[in-house]
Length: 192
Image 1 (tube, rainbow, N blue to C red):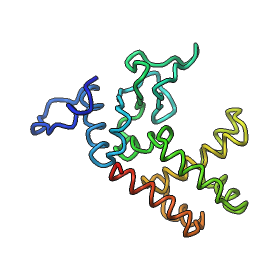
Image 2 (tube, helix red, strand yellow):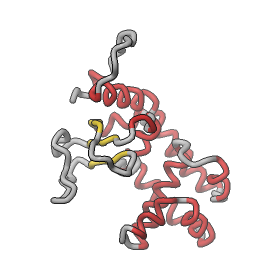
Image 3 (cartoon, rainbow, N blue to C red):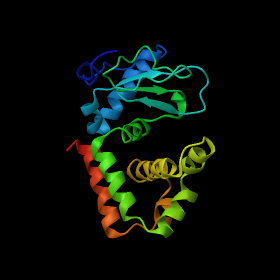
Image 4 (spheres, rainbow, N blue to C red):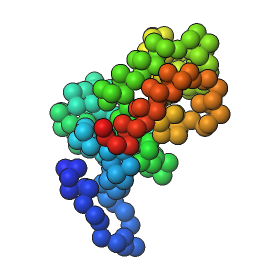
């Protein structure tokens, strides 16, 4: 994998040669960092995943080793964040940016602030809007973790457009909550 600084260099005009998995990873990362500069702070690596995962992607934080059933991919050395993409035809730069919301300290602070500010009505709506909530419960995760995953989904939905406008509107965010979300979105697109 190339360092981000080399990936960000302008590329020559595209040829008709088929894109290789390495090219795909470099192009995706380059485009994502251009649109969402906060990603560069994580010095990430991107690779195509294999094995027919049902997920679109899987993010490997710098210190996560995995386990016997799901070990850390060899192409991601410990100390580097890695993202495996399993469905490249349906995975855009904004989706890659959304993956980094799981590990970014400012995004985690926004998630915690949003969670603390949510009313019981909003939490009930969140559980209906975020498919991540039901999937988390079905996979045996705790209620607390399922709510955290649902709030992560709401962050992605608002900041990268993964949720339709109507779903965001149904959350009935307060002005304070919109400020949390808008500040996060601003950070993502400026890196500051």
